[in-house]
Structures are given as structure tokens and as C-alpha cells.
Length: 242
Image (cartoon, rainbow, N blue to C red; front, side, top):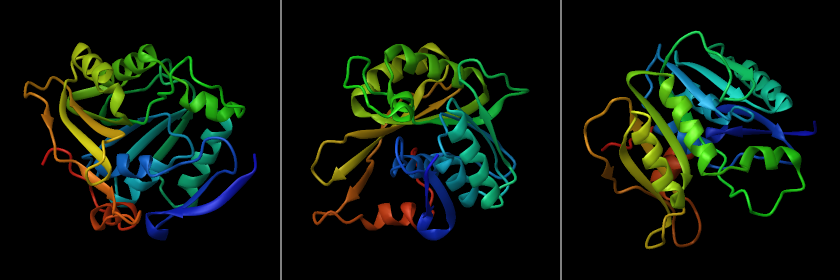
């Protein structure tokens, strides 16, 4: 695998990823910033790729313990190497399918940027990217069910995904006893429709879902807003529930 060397969080995290195929954007950084984990807690990530989200979470919350599951074995090895290069001994990477991997216990939190490209969409010529992104309503439901079932009581699941998948995810979260408590839009610019959202579900929650103000990512000139920059380079937390 040909890789490129880079960094996350303004240089705080070393990050190697494939030169071609599925490459990380800002989604895993925002996802990691929004997980309400504390030192000593256990966090599961489905579809961890080269480990960007777990790396950023570990940099923000020293002492957190993370398990990443990745179907692509070369990517899983790369994620493990990234954790080692950054000295994050609390990260474990498992190669396999999130639907079938066995775990010894439950988790305090789970997170994912699930595959969401529709099954009838254009096929990527790059196998790794196709595997990472090809999804369906059934896949989303399966992932939500698996993650919800691995949570302790009052544990949280956090997802980042296109706004069009909100109905599918809300239904799945309710079905699997991890109802959504926060819908957090990510506005590309002020006044523009949100393409991405963060969803927070809590195991056995009884409170209704709230539509939060969200985060504006870019200024009119295309540069990141101060609030987005604080997360993406400063490593700040992103609070979804106000």
C-alpha cells in the first residue's frame, strides 16, 4: 500500500493514510470531538479506517481506551501503526466486520461514520473506497443495531452522516433502544443547507430528541470559522447536547 504522511489537530497527531482510495476528511475529526468520553472509559468505533477518529479522541481525552474495527486488513494494520507511532497504547484495532466481530464486554460509547453511498450509485474503481462507502438503509440499520447492543446502560452512540439519512437512523436508534437525543447540523456556510449531521443516541433514554443550533464550518471566503478551527486544529470538544 502506498501511503502519505501527514498530521491531524494542527500537528498534534501524526497520521499516515493511503495515497489513493478512501482518504480522511474532516468528518472523523468532528466525530471524535463530539464523543462525550472521559478518561478510563471504553469507546468502540465501527469502520475505523486508518484510525483518524480514535487518534483524535485519544489526543483530546488522555486515558480513554478505544477499540476500532476495520473490514480492510491493510487499513487495520495502518490504523494500528498510527496508534503506535503516536504512543496511544490504549487503542486496539481489530480487522473484521462490525456485524460479526466478538467483543469481551460492553462499551461506554460507540461512534461511526457509516457507509452511506446508495447501492445503485456510481461504482468507484478503487476497491477500498467502494468497500468503505457503499451502504444502504439495511446496512445503516445493522450498524446502529450492533453498536447499540454493545453499549452499557446510558451509554452513547454518535454518528456522522448525510442529512438525508436522518429518518433511517432515527428509526433504527428507536428500534434498538438507543433513541436519538440530539440532532446537530453541520452547516457548510451560514444560510446554506446542512449536508452532514451528527446524531447522538443514548441507551434507554426517555428524553425526546432536540434539534440543536449546530456548527457553521466555513466563512464566506471558504476559510474555516473560528469555532470549527478550534476543533479541527485546536483539539477542542464539540458538545452536541448544549
